[in-house]
Amino acid sequence: MENEQVLVVGATGYVGGRLVPRLLSAGYRVRALGRSVEKLACRPWGRNPNVELAGGDVLDADSMERAADGCGAAFYLVHSMTAQKKAYARADRTGAQNMAAAAAAGGLDRIIYLSGLGDPDDADLSPHLRSRHEVETILADGPVPVVVLRAAMILGSGSASFEMLRYLTERLPVMITPRWVHTPCQPIAIRDILAYLMGSLVKTDLPPGTYDIGGPDVLSYREIIDIYAEEAGLARRRIIPVPLLTPKLSAYWIHLITPVPADIAQPLAEGLAVPVVCREHRIQDRIPLPLTPCREAVRIALERVRQNMVETCWSDAGTLTPPEWAFCGDADYTGGTVLECGYRIRIDAPPEAVWDPVIRMGGKTGYYFGDSLWWLRGALDRLAGGMGLRRGRRHPTELQVGDALDFWRVMVLEPPRRLILLAEMKMPGEALLEIRINPLGDGTSEFEFLSRFLPRGLAGMLYWWTLYPFHQWIFRGMQKAIARAAGRPILSGPRRFTPKIPDACTFIPDRTPPE
Image (tube, rainbow, N blue to C red; front, side, top):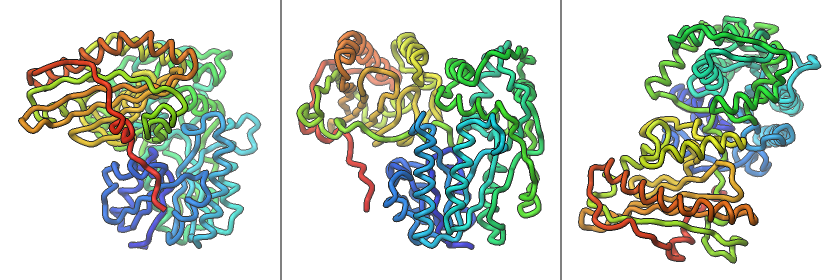
């Protein structure tokens, strides 16, 4: 029904971020729910007049009830693996209960939930898939009709499954794999996922219930690897399955080789350890689609990656919660000492000229100076279970709030003046890096780097002071290199500076969602 307002819960996630523009193109009004309104606003569709941005959390029942009020239907596209890690099952349970209650209070017509394939009666079903099925049950127990779409591996540029496949195949000509590499799987292209989601909304006569959805091919993971290698122009990969490689060990190996962290890789690997194929095909009678073959889905995803046209990425779903101490630099307020290291230069250039190389930082571009040390820090972080540098960035020249940038997360983006990055690497404390470009009114600019760190215990203090000389050297070198990349001369500096207290207390803007 055109002009109906539809609630999308999980609008900044991989699927939700692609669904919103399709809803708008079909004439729907969208209320997009996310933990950060600013992150929502920075999406390409965030300023569309038919989009209403709603700050909230599925774990907050009141915010869910406010978000559902006035909507006709809701897409529930969240899971808590990224945000809650090992506690995801409990978080998913609470979120589903809040969604069901909010839908009932708001009088919604239906809830559409994207779940996972797998036989619920299979004793070997992974905890992740069991949690997905539990969410189905909780939603269906409410008074609002629920349409559940169960899918297996999603093939699309930027999906966690595709990134895992891409890096494993490209980096390992010989693979020692677990036995599940021969387990049958029915992957589905992201375009078909979106078409089924849209059809579940448009087809108002679609009976509530659970529907299996999948592509036209039932393949083993080994066969999918072979297809990827052929489409990428690689030699056939040699696969050596061994019985002792458990999903947990597989997850750590995937963590070291691919950008997908172990916390996400393990549920994905566990999901592949049991057959995930469609057991019924009723959806095809109600929503007939020309399904995308696996080979074509891989080809399209690869082309999107090569053209830097990745619409959304699995890392988009990361949390965007600044640490409390970032709201004010006062040590008494934060409950500890915030350590700082700042350098500034004066450069013969307007902010726009300096901003261009700054916004390209990270990913394949690197950090302009000391890249071997950045690589070493990323490798150590990866070994410690962190993100490392392999996550890269969604686009080589574009950033938006909430984007992952190697082992950073974009917290504040104010072109061409200010960029604040939250550190997501493993460390004994919390860190932020702020880059400011202040115009001086005479065609020149003041270019600042400021690192802030709240140490955690003695380990945090040792960590800071051990790396402090490297911070000084790297910051000075980066500023000089960025000036060279901008093609502009340095007029003075780099020189050390300490921020004023008023600057510190406006470090991160307040993002409390509006009532």
